[in-house]
Length: 252
Image 1 (cartoon, one colour):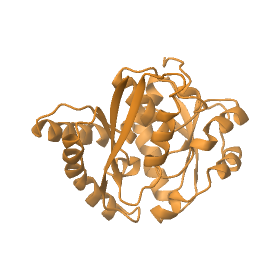
Image 2 (cartoon, rainbow, N blue to C red):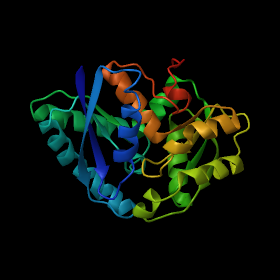
Image 3 (cartoon, one colour):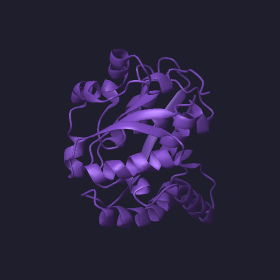
Image 4 (cartoon, rainbow, N blue to C red):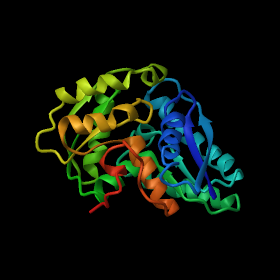
């Protein structure tokens, strides 16, 4: 049996990624009994999703990367999508390179991902050229996320903003309600639906059901993060009942 240490850099008010990421990876136990995962996190201060708090939090990610590298994680992810996307188009590459160098300066070489990068990379890998998205953000921030995705060559056909500004309240949203929201979303002709373009809004329990409901691929920022983590670790990209991306089908 091999143990993999999973590191996450999370906002201090995030309660979802430390729930959904372990849930997905531990759900593999029956199919892959020789794998074992342990979970480790370091936190950046953030209570409200505002440009000022997102900027300050992004600066703190360097400290978090060093702390997680002390634990010799096998892979780590900057688990806040909007903190990256709010800094400007393509910023996930800048952030990942900076954090990678920070880790190397601490004497170790650990792959560093980001949820923002994982989402756009996964959309590209599966050749999802047009998507519709649901976010918990206020409308201007949803537009920023949509613009970021479009800057990567992926069209955003429609979006729904739930307009919840308090990050703690976002973590308390009921994922079952996403099944109603996805039916209001214009997803005609899209290649995939991003049920939660936010790592704090819970969606895991609704991913497969939403996919079955609308009959096309459904994913989330957290699903994309797990997909890229597994791929980076050289493991099968399979998690039961977690939608198309984690069904074991290869990206195009």
